[in-house]
Image (cartoon, rainbow, N blue to C red; front, top):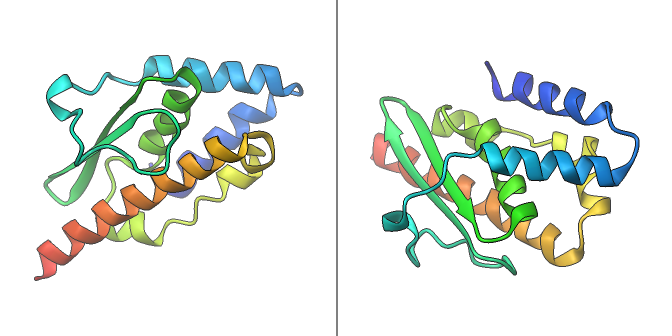
Amino acid sequence: MTIAEIQEEIVEEFSIFDDWMDKYEHIIESGKELDSISDALKTNTNLVKGCQSQVWLHAEMDGENLILQAGSDAIITKGLVSLMVRTLSGHTPKEILSAQLSFVDEIGLKEHLSPTRSNGLVSMIKKIKLYALTYSVKANG
């Protein structure tokens, strides 16, 4: 499934809900489905700077695809990072770097998240794209 197709699927899931409390519940449920990141990967290197809560993002290559693992100590934040992992993990660094994460706006996250959570989401995206850039440079270097 392409990144665009995954985003369409997420937008469709969120369109079922009229109330933002239901959407938050769906975000929390998404976080519960995220495979837990191992304690060994909860390092300062993998810590996302700019998040109010602790969020860890780890990336490694599997063939040509970047595989992401993530976790957080906060339930909504874990749900947000799970949406990013679901959307971007398993794709090439090039696909990740060129991805326009339109679903974030389409489901209304930017307007409904607190400023600190919104900043944290931007920091998560930046860290994932930085991983993609790093692995892209290594592959072409």
